[in-house]
Image (cartoon, rainbow, N blue to C red):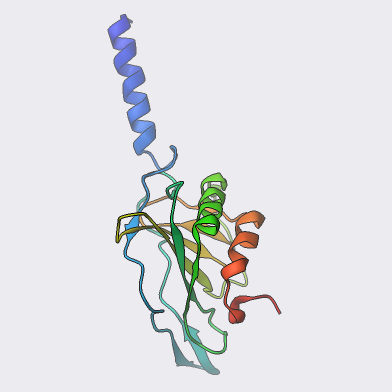
Length: 182
């Protein structure tokens, strides 16, 4: 193999790894943080009412791991209730730059979600969407955190990361009362 052929092969492998869901971190996914919490609703079920929120980003073709920038100026967290949570409503909290940077670091350090099939008992749908604000921009880097069942961190079009104890602990400082352990 000639030197230029090896160079092309190496460059191709690097480019494919960057685009692969099994490669490194993807570019942050961006969205506009809400100014108020979205609605959640109690819906009738066979035995009563089930709380239903709308969040999450799983089952989307992925390109790289969930990632957020390293120097956010703040974080907005939209908390979505689990199906049996009372009161049945979403909540919005905010954190300063110090907390946002710590959470961003926690996400980037979390390991890739393992491959395989999982059974996630006790998954009631509770979660939070985190918007990492950036200086001079109305768009924020976002990450979805699943707080029950097989806990993980994902974003639209990105491969999930495994939830870490450190991320849960750091996130708890802005967790609203209904989401705190009793």
